[in-house]
Amino acid sequence: MQHTFHIPVLGLGYSIDTPLKVARFGISSVVSIVDDELTERMRKHYCGLHGLEYKAIGKKEHDSRARRITAYLNLLNKLVDDQVQAMREEDFQDGTDLGRYFEMLPEGSELKKMFSSMLEMEASDEKRFIQNELKAAVAAGRIDVNIMSKVDKANYLDGVYLGDDQTDALAAIRGFAESDLRSSVVISAGLNPRLFSYMEQLEAFYPAGNEAPRKEIILKVSDYRSALIQAKILAKKGLWVSEFRIESGLNCGGHAFATDGLLLGPILQEFKDNRAALYAELFDLYASCLRVKGIEVSRNPAQRVCVQGGIGTAEEHTFLLKEYGLDATGWGSPFLLVPEATSVDMQTLADLGEATDADFYLSNSSPLGVLFNNFKKSSAEAQRQQRIDKGRPGSPCTKKYLCTNTEFTEEPICTASREYQHLKIKQLNGLGLAKEELQRKIDQVTEKVCLCVGLCTSAYQKHEILKAREDKAVSICPGPNLAYFSGTYSLREMVGHIYGRCNLLVGVFRPNLFIKELNLYIDYLKKEFELLAQESLGQPAFAKRSKQLDKFYAQLNEGAAYYRSLLSRSEATLQMWNADQVRRLDQAISHLRSMVTFEALPAV
Image (tube, rainbow, N blue to C red):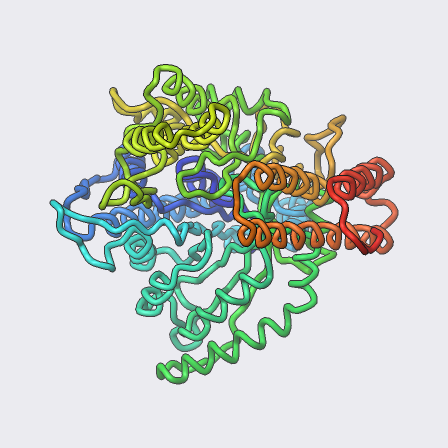
């Protein structure tokens, strides 16, 4: 891979066609395959745009979800291949995609050096030879896919259960496995034993002779322990994790999986310290399992470690790569402001470009019951409030991907649905709660918002394929780091910013990614203490939760101490640890220590 960054999955629709915009430049990105209705409609759109035959795959057809996903991924693969072939036919002239490919490469790239030398040469056979070598070296970025392992709804047709292999996660992974892509599935949102067992049955995830598997596995993780547990389960099934993609628990976009006070810096240090041992342990399990299956292990598979979440400057990008020996970083939310890379409708794009830090917040909006990074100015938030004001909270539930609740119904329903919220509020009204307590609990119910529809709408609007009577409200889930970027940018500008060729944050006062995350965790802990004080828990439950928060607090202090030690061995010239940043760190530590008093806490 020529680039040292990738674009992670962005909601359902925001990166659904990102490979068609950036892959030809060697930039890897991730497409969500959670919503097969979205992939089908985007396939129809792009087939029409490129004059290709489109044959619809109906929702009620056999294995339709997997087949829809396969068909869309195959289309992406074909169109990107066509783009790369067309680039190789271009001349090295200003404004061509061929020239842009090499111009956007990082400065340390051997291909970039070769390209720069070629530009200075006079016309000659040698120059033409080098140009042909450069063209032959052009390689597309990877088209990786993402599934949330826990989003695994059972499916029925006319009331008949379609079987375990037709649940959402299993059908999606089958659709990916049967596609033409040579790429990876990014598995997020934790462990799904049924999914892992099903993957063991898929040939595409196994090596063939000296060839690496056609399909590889990336685990998105928030700490070392969860990475080890999941990777060992997979290795014992003969499935190799080709990359650990570490994501900040709170300083990221989308769903936020808070750790128990473990901060990104210490987590990265743990991976760095244990990387070789981790590889050896996993490889022994993996090789043993393959031998039992009669598969020869003829090569040592690669295993990358990458990080994403809150990275905002070229200096932070370079620091993470060097300090922790990482292979790449992920830049997600800033690319929402790059129309050349993502599908964001014009109104949402304008709102994001003008947003301030106060517009981004951590919410309980997700029906999954997982913290969700939200945007106050989104039209979905406005619509949610309008429905509450009209006395009809909740959303119509049409896609049903997040139907998990059986509190009132035999068949699971979504907690963001009008049906659930009506039933839950009716129940709360009958409990005889005090007025303030009742309103607080009702607010918790009505905070849930439909994501299945809202996270696709922006892409439909951008490509003008929103149907006449479809909901126009847009949900979007950028990380808090986006607050420091303003306006819109070209792809060249954003890539140049990542590699330090330009600075898009001139004059912006921004805490570095470690300090920002520390403050997010402090705010999170403060809210948890407030909730504990509000809840009417019995002594055993109260003691258990208090102990958990004690551990959380202690680990935050240990993380702060780690950053103190990091200061002593970081280069004095690093702006990310200048006097202002050190002051911000001291303020965060002071805030942390003033929150609650514990005995015998070591000084930070």
